[in-house]
Length: 366
Ligand SMILES: Cc1ncc(COP(=O)(O)O)c(C=O)c1O
Image (cartoon, rainbow, N blue to C red):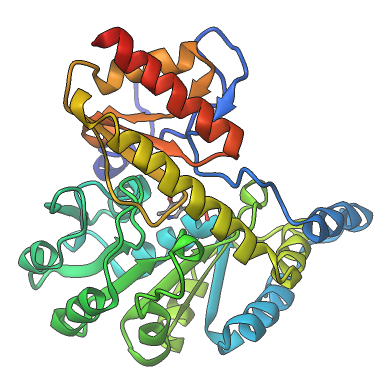
């Protein structure tokens, strides 16, 4: 029978698999699988969200002006050069959609964020996967993948699911060596979690270069994952092209007001960053102490740690064992990481609990 035929490149897409929130038997347990903020949402953002209930019959402001103005004030940016979307996921799709198509190539690292491949394939472009260097972004490997067909390079910094961070000099070197016709997308979804005042220089590049887009989100540090508010910054022609294909009303009214209120909570970022950094250090040390059993924590600058299992206890067994003990973490065989678990840094109690559970599992596998 005749029926509509999807484009072949669409059927090549493996659907995105989100982090789980219940166990196989439906129990609701501690969710450490989606890198959400264990400290929740700033109180002002929750109040702004609730207040938006009074205007649900209205379409949101399609230009997102209150969000752009607030971001511009906080980060010292030109509001006209801010693109926004339904989470930074949409902004990543807009970047691929505006700059790549059939016959073009889109580069990202082997253990990179899953949406890059979906965004690339959706346009009909060919995904090109650069090898990593012990799970970290390898600038030379990316550059070796560049051809005259390359249109977009996606780099998450810090990277998900590895948590690794490429320093400013590496990002500068990558940008300097890329052809001017290639769009470099620096995905800063976890930028607020980087230690101290480290800065990979991405925003400065986005402000001055004609081929750099930085993407950011309110989903992680700002605790607004449910409201889907993401944004990006780049040269005016890049942003202009992306605006032409974005959904007209991609940011909800409640989300816009909550995002503005979250930005106004001045202590929030510092407090969350400090708590996360302390627990991340403690957790990474705990994993290091299990090194004899073949466990290894990849150095992380994000709100999660990738734990690699190279001993008797496999990542799959640890994943199932942790679920039995009441912790859902992320096992990523679909991303060619069957040997590792990505574990979100939760509250102090959750983080201590998951570390203790892992220690017990190592003991039993021993
Ligand atoms: C590296 C990276 N980029 C972008 C996103 C998308 O986040 P959101 O669409 O919620 O802004 C995520 C979410 O997990 C991520 O890990």
